[in-house]
Image: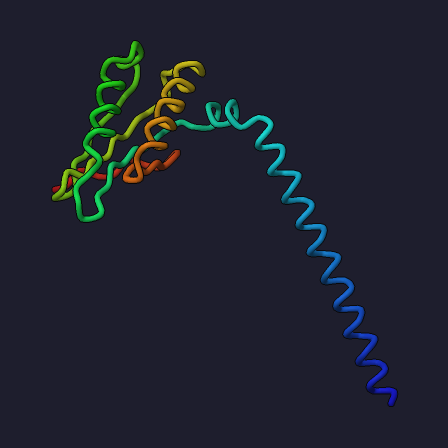
Length: 140
């Protein structure tokens, strides 16, 4: 009988402490997410140094309209000369990556680029972003 009592107490304590730890982790996660949301746009412009924009294909070619709109915007922007942007074509259906170095852009210019990219992403499912990742190597 003592064995069952000790086992029951140990199991109860284990459940009590594990539930308490999970609750604490959930509270910490929620508070950190709310802090990100409060200052999301300025935090993003401060932390993004490199950006890779990929136009991908899933058997039907890339979204040529979104890719064209992106290229037109980037080429015509007032800060185009300061933005180091390279193109890498890598697929058979028009897949292309644009690798950008934001090192010489000020905060307002970064914000404009990122907002425009967000607009384009809302209308295209075939566009992917990678923040602060090295550029893809050119095909040999």
